[in-house]
Image (cartoon, rainbow, N blue to C red; front, side, top):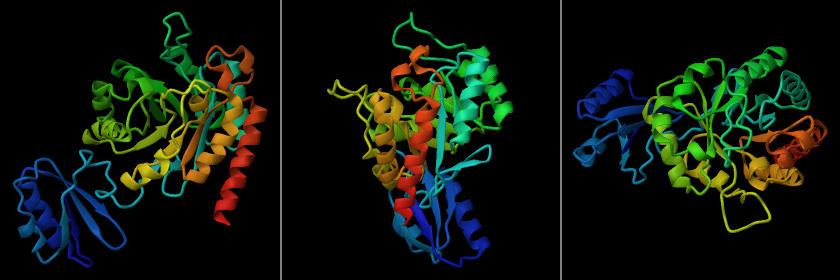
Length: 334
C-alpha cells in the first residue's frame, strides 16, 4: 500500500502520520519527490482502513499495490534511484560502462586491460575471481588471489572494481570490492541475497538464465527487504530455443523494468550473444532502448583467454564500441 501526502504538509503532521502507521505493525518507506511525498507501507496492510487513511487532511490518495515486489516498485519510489559506486553514479540519467576480462588471469593482464578500457571511457573495471562454470573441469578462477590482483589494478588506475560473489561465506574477502555482482546462476540463491541485504555496498543483480522479470524483481526485493537498496539490475540474455547465439538478449526488459521499478538497469551484450562481433550492435541497441550502462568483456588476447574468449573484445574493438555508443547517445540527445 502507498499513501501520497499532499504538498506543503508540515513536518510535524507528516511525522505524526508515520508514527501512527508504524503502530499498525507495518514498515514505512519514505520517498520525497519535488511535488509529493510517498509513504510506502510494507507488511500486512490488510487491516488498515484505506478510507480512513484517505480521508485524513494531509493525504491525497491511497493505493494498494498488487505486485509482490514492494520496495523495488516504482509506485513506492517514483523517482529513479541513483546508485553511487565509489563516485561513479549509475541511474537517473547517469550512464556508465563496466569493462574488463571474464576472468582475472595475471597481474599483467588485469592491469593492462584496466588501463586500456579506462582510456577508452570505461568507468568501472570488471574481472572474475570466483567463476561459476558449467563443467567442473573448466577454469574456476584465481579466487582470493584474483581479488588481490583486482585491488592492484584499482590502485594502478583508480577504477572501482566489480566482481562476482558465489557464496555468503566469501563476504569477508569482498571488503574492498566496490560493486558486488550476483551472477545469473545465483539470482535465486535466497540465502546469499539475504546476507547481501545486510551490507551497505552496491549490488549488481544479473537476470537468471530463464527468469521472468517478476522473478528478477523479487530477487531484488530479497536484498532490499534486508535494508540494502543500492541495487543495479543487469539484463544479460535469457535461454530460449535459439542456437545461433549463446542467449537471447531481451532488450524489452530495459523499458519494461523502468516502468515497473525505480532501480537502474544496465545491459551485458557479451554474455547475451556470446560472440564478439555482436557486442557492438547490441550495445548500440541497448543505449537506444534506454539502458543506464553497459557491461562488456574485454581481454588483451581473447584467443588465449581462459574463459569466454569468443565473446571478448580486444582493447581496440572496445574503443570502437565506446565511440559508437557515444554517437548513439549524442543522436538521442540531439
